[in-house]
Image (tube, rainbow, N blue to C red; front, side, top):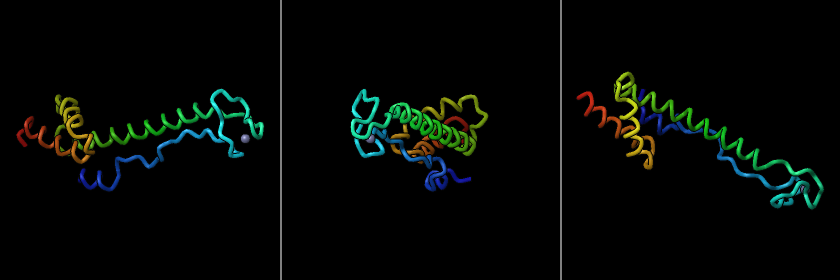
Length: 119
Ligand SMILES: [Zn+2]
């Protein structure tokens, strides 16, 4: 199992599209805040904000699941799966590296694991 290959191939990246709020009626008219019916065709306005919120939740849950998978795989790879300091180690690696991506998090974790285990 090569974590870097996994990261690069997108194994830990969600396949879902980032949701967009769709406030456009099927007739093409754009709903205004507070509209119950489309001012152009009279269709009932769907609760597009609730739909968006739901899609965003699904997206975030998928991201979370994949992130957890990455966490497990990375900790296992560096030999910290069962170590009492695993959460601290991962959180530290995450806060130092995640702005540059999961690959960077993994490299930080390797260094932290070395300090902890000497391996
Ligand atoms: Zn309409």
